[in-house]
View 1 (cartoon, helix red, strand yellow):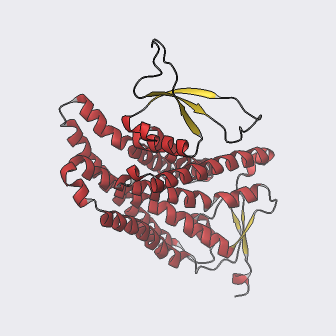
View 2 (cartoon, rainbow, N blue to C red; view 1 turned 120 degrees about the vertical axis):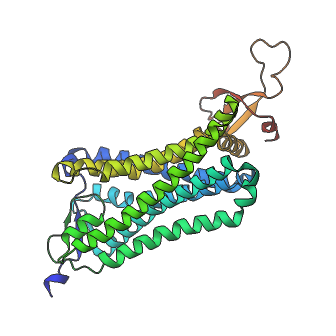
View 3 (spheres, rainbow, N blue to C red; view 1 turned 30 degrees about the vertical axis):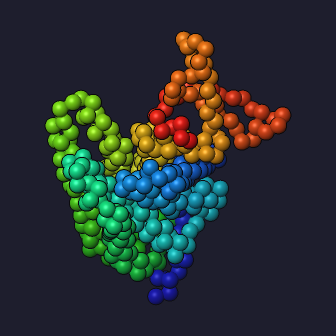
Length: 360
């Protein structure tokens, strides 16, 4: 019994093969982490402050950005600390908390993206009834159900894994507390627990993927029935951002878990897991910003309100004595630090804007 309580902490090996460049890895991971948190905070702020984005699609986008911040923060701060720490230790309680939060948030993302697929299905396949069906109450219910489903599915897993005794080796060959290494270190029979966890994971993964696939099958069929090419392109453009995020997520999960087990693929899986943890939350705000006209417009409005982006009417090429045309502007990026005599370079960007842009 004394041996079963001897392990008080775990050692996270991380990436021992690249210890010589651990400072470079630290800087790279830190920069990506800051960009991820900043980008998702900007998306949340825009959705909250711009009334034109108070729609179901952007309500779910705000949820996804919030989840992205929590998800990347569940593992990356500890990874950054361990890159500068020779011991690389984590307490048992901290390891369990990290494992739960990481998989709870990862599972919630699958449910949340499935809810977003349902939203896109209603918007394209039932546009006349969309605003009636997708009410604020239903949006809140779908969001709550996504978070609750992610929590409960991992709560069942936690009840099975966390009570296990740890009395032997305490080295985890990963950069965070993954469930599989924890089961390998447990001083108890874990085969039945592994089977239960596999069943829960399969239900979540295949259940959400089937619902999402069915939604997009109906969406594609509906889009193909639109007579005009411009109408088809406009309808499909509302789904491209969400579809890109889905492909990124499922592609990363397949790369990590749908591989033969063994020591040879362990390093590759760790790198793939790191990319999934870092890159997917980083790309989400960029994908939705670059591929969504409403988000780009709202972002430009916010930049103008905060005097970061300043509209200036100037003569256009080929015009006579008139300044600009009805809704054409050049935009000047002005640094907030450029005050008085301290003025950095000014970059002039041509932009075509919508009619309501002049209201900014």
